[in-house]
Image (cartoon, rainbow, N blue to C red):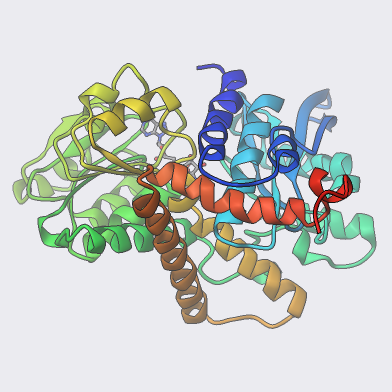
Amino acid sequence: MTVNSLLSDASLRLEKALHHVNISEDASERLKYPKMSLSVSIPVRLDDGSLKIFRGYRVRYDDTRGPGKGGVRYHPNVSLDEVQSLAFWMTFKCALLDLPFGGAKGGITVDAKSLSKAELERLSRGYIEAIADAIGPDTDILAPDAYTNAMVMGWMMDHYSIIQRKILPGVVTGKPLGMGGSQGRNTATASGAFDVIKTICKKLEYVPEKTTVAVQGFGNAGAELAQQLACAGYRVVAVSDSRGGIYAEQGLDIPSIRQYKSESRNMAAVYCEKSVCNIVEHQTITNEQLLTLDVDILIPAALENQITADNAHQVQAQLIFEVANGPISSAADVILEEKGIMVVPDILTNAGGVTVSYFEWVQNRSGFYWPATDIRDQLKTRMVTATNQVWHIAQTRQISMRTAAYVQALMRLGEALDAKGTRTYFSGSSA
Ligand code: NAD
């Protein structure tokens, strides 16, 4: 699927949800278009003295409920269409979690790994230079996404503060702790997903010890979530990264895999090189095999479009929790629904990251910093509340969890958009 069709694919979910919610025509029409799409060129002096121009983007999809909020992605595939679709998802995610934010996203078309550290810093500062007029703590707030991290966020916040001649930590979240970052931000997405999974499993009466789990993607989100699930007693039987995966019917020792992967950068080798294979029988599998394993729970936590019309028929899991953004195409959605597989959507499952970003923004603006336990408690409360709301809508209206999540978000967005007046109001035909 091309990135162009990513936005149309995302919009199909909106169309479906609009059938189940009573919002004005004005509001639904407004939500079909991004509010602002900025395309910039960023000149960067490379270490060898040459000048290279990079393409960058910032999209504010909607800001009716508050300033735009969304990450910045560095990747060779970044395009305006991709950034628009990611900003669209952020709009609905923030509304679903009832955060006082709209949705935004940014990106630079670059292979970050090909740049030196100094070049990367100049590129990050150049990006802020180019989009400074469109962002700010009350306008549009940045955060990390693929191939950007806390240090990049620190450079961005620093550069914005230099331009504005005052320290403005609230313009960026996901910063290093020493620059106004929040406790718990690193593990927020996994912790939030854990809360969603636990809440749904309790409703479905799944016992952790008898529940098997496969996780695709062993990065920030996937590896931490696999570990939290394993610690809570779930049997994590398969994990994978871009090079492939491993499977053990009796369950994997996730902390060891994490430790050895960070040392060897190779997951398949973990068990044998470190002699754990004497204790745990395991087999290597491909990413395609992982997606079709006979497990209770499947967690795609890597990339977009992993389950499509091509492989959806082979999926055997009963429950899928989307930790990655957009891992299931809309065509696959239909097939999974026909098979009776419940999909808990990305805008709910992975919303822990933006929720703790919200806490970071609040802390920056109040100048009062919360301990890690308070962050974790507040995160859990919000994730469990949102999960219960989506569950209730899905059950009472007999619709999928995905459509229910969009319905909940649309009700909030519709209320905000309609508060500015509707056709009925202005035509004078209502009280
Ligand atoms: P990451 O870069 O830390 O990890 C990604 C992992 O996926 C890596 O282990 C990588 O090897 C693996 N991978 C790459 N290609 C793969 C393939 N073809 N098959 C299997 N694995 C593959 O990224 P992350 O921060 O963990 O994010 C993962 C997903 O979660 C992304 O879709 C991201 O947008 C989404 N997400 C992350 C956060 C967050 O806070 N980290 C928040 C919201 C959504």
